[in-house]
Image 1 (cartoon, rainbow, N blue to C red):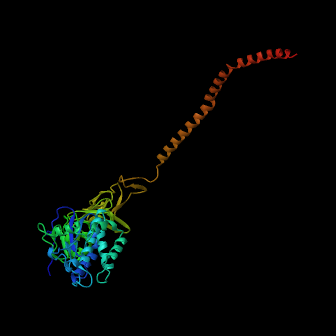
Image 2 (tube, one colour; image 1 turned 90 degrees about the vertical axis):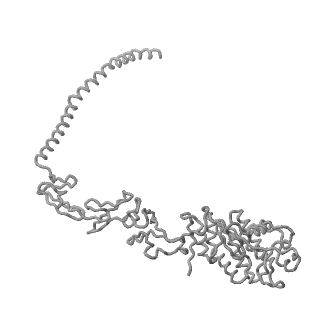
Image 3 (cartoon, rainbow, N blue to C red; image 1 turned 180 degrees about the vertical axis):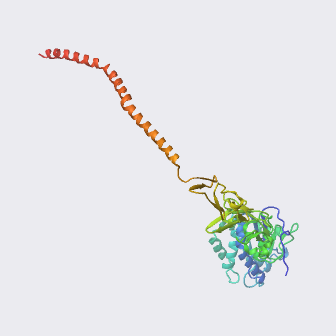
Length: 456
């Protein structure tokens, strides 16, 4: 068994792969015709994804030959050629009396070329794959449905502009050149390293003839090899063309067996070791020996690769959500973060050093008890009275008494001294207005008889 590696055999001048498929609409040519139609049906999905994404430029081609001038009027040329012997195809059944004729094949080839050309002008070049596969199923020559009417039904179902396609095809009976077919005969001649196209089917990728099995996976690998590394589309990384090198020793890449995470990725070019992205968490490293979770969410996946342990319902971790990378043992533990051990604060005399205190080490912490009725304050490592002393209570009583006495004294001062002063001031102000009020009353009294006299 031979394996063909296309990684370096197909040139890639830009980020788009250009490829051609030389084919035929005839399905009565035996095993070769069956092979090419099976390839078209199986490869259609990949081809359309590549074209829709702008990753490839695909062009279908059809081989024709011309009839020598001395035989243009012969029955053989008339049955196999259009446009007065300019474009010909072999009789599909090799029977010049019955069945389909070579010119029927030429005319359908021309229609398929125009379908691609017209669809390409409206940015729907991938419709060619639908038309060719549908025509093969609905208009098979084997089932005697290979006709113009059947082809038009297929075009209608795909919403193709039939009048534009007819205009592109021109008149097959006219004694003139057909622009589309003339171009096909010109490009059939090889230029550069490609060589002439002489057999069907032929696949040309980036101007290099493909020499391999006409099968979906093999052709997709060859097309994908035309991209520069790291620029290939996702379809080139699909599982059906993977090399499966990661199945053996994980491809020699980094792996976290506990979290089932690996840096090994199979591609059509072979395996690559690349730190992955898992649930939105990016791993960083060389992909071969190290990959470290990076970012605030890293602790959610296998604890960020850091140490973590649970005992008696308590869990401690060396991964901190406040840090984007690295492992650090929590308070009460020491180590490198990948492994942490409990610190015995009592033995190391790093805590509970107050006078008369008793220390007991616990996992991740310690318990400290003060003598008597004192209360231990861990943050300051000191003991204080659990309840206040007699002097403290006396002092508090004195303070409260002073405050209450000051309040009472203020009230008495306001009620007797300040209020009597304010009352005298108010009365003095009011007395200044009292004479005016009396004078007005006198004038009013004197004027009253005069008003009465005037009424008599």
